Amino acid sequence: MGFPIHRSRRLRRTERLRALVRETHLTADQLVMPLFVCPGTKVRNPIGSMPGNFQLSVDELVTECQQLLDEGIGNVILFGIPESKDPVGSSGYADDGIIPQAIRALKKNAEDLCIWADVCMCEYTDHGHCGVIENGEVVNDKTLALLSAAALTYARAGADIVAPSDMMDGRIGVVRDSLDENGFEAVTIVSYAAKYASGFYGPFRDAAESPPQFGDRKGYQMDPPNALEALSEVAMDLEEGADIVMVKPALPYLDVIRRVKDEFEVPVAAYNVSGEFSMLHAAAQNGWLDLEKVMMESLIGIRRAGADIILTYFAKEAARLLRK
Ligand code: PBG
Image (cartoon, rainbow, N blue to C red; front, side):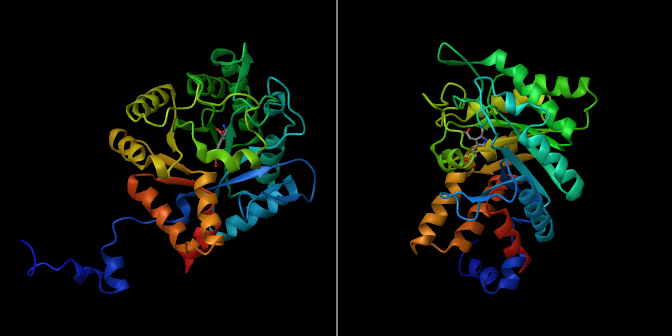
């Protein structure tokens, strides 16, 4: 049955009609804001490549999170910029490290917040890789102990969610074990299960001061052409105890998000990464794109692909537009 009995445009005629038949929705509850925490007080360092984002000292982080809560954003993921770095990333699992300090301050001053702690070594190692280096390579099994130490430290400080982003094999299992053995069986694990070796992380590495000092991350992050491999990564992480699985980046990997969503019965998160954010801003600054339109279109596209949760630097602005 086609035209002229059917006219698709009838359902597009007014905003009321369009809203009535809309298939996908975006709400502030589904958004997670990434934030960068640094030492000091009253620090609010603008990140050049990511307009509107800052390296924040703990006091400023608290203020920012209180505002986010007021705007309807109840989830944040924290990345640390430590005082010092060494080959084994000790500042990443020290009890008085930057992330535990931040978590404790937020628990006290922004109780409603759901606090995610990213678990990785690259911000804390002097070589910028996500694990221990031996003979120029990141050694998997020795890194696992450091990751589980970091996750445990963040759980002790009060993190609701720990999110390993390092892509070492077997990390979800060791993190789950060490959390459970220490009485943190209620702490959620979001696994960066399908994390690709992407050029879109460029601005983040400026923000977190974490670029690899030699080589690249292709020996541990996924090869962009692969999708079946993402399904096997997800299956393994779920078996090891992940509660939520993530695909990252989001926009160049919408097919992967959809396949993961179709294949598994767990919540799926997608990380709309720094480069996806910065490229829209750069085009908008040139007057080439309308930022609000392309931001909302990107986010709804990621939802339509199957993501239940979106980590995005647009969280605050999107929440503001969603309230209008
Ligand atoms: C840490 C980590 C990275 C991102 C999140 N966690 C950087 C990387 O793997 O190089 C990137 C996030 C973004 O680009 O917004 N491993």
